[in-house]
Amino acid sequence: MKRRYTWRSSNIPKVRIMIFKVYEVIKDNILFRIEEDYPEVGAYLYVYEDGQCVRDFLQNNIDMCKMVALEKYNVLIDSWKRK
Image 1: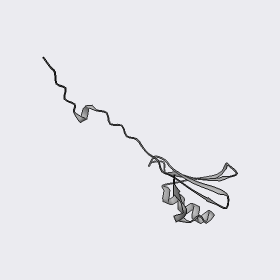
Image 2: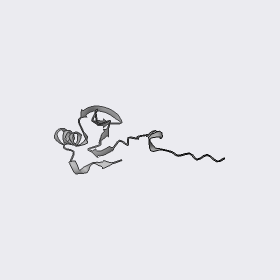
Image 3: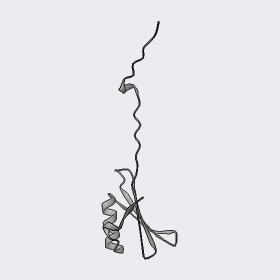
Image 4: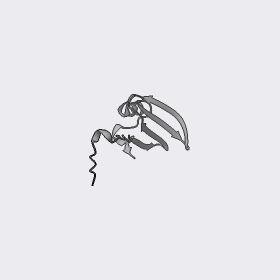
């Protein structure tokens, strides 16, 4: 006797993978990097000089990080490149 197995979607565990966005721009030999984190955390803006992180800012989202970079370092909003 053959058995048939029926798979229900409720029996299959769901795996959710988060892909975080990363943006970078170089201005005046300074690397600016934005790294997205979980939504409840926000996004980080890192400022690197000579390969060393010299400042970091935690904001609610990527757009807020871009605004901080614009206000503090004159990094234009449209200059960011997604990595």
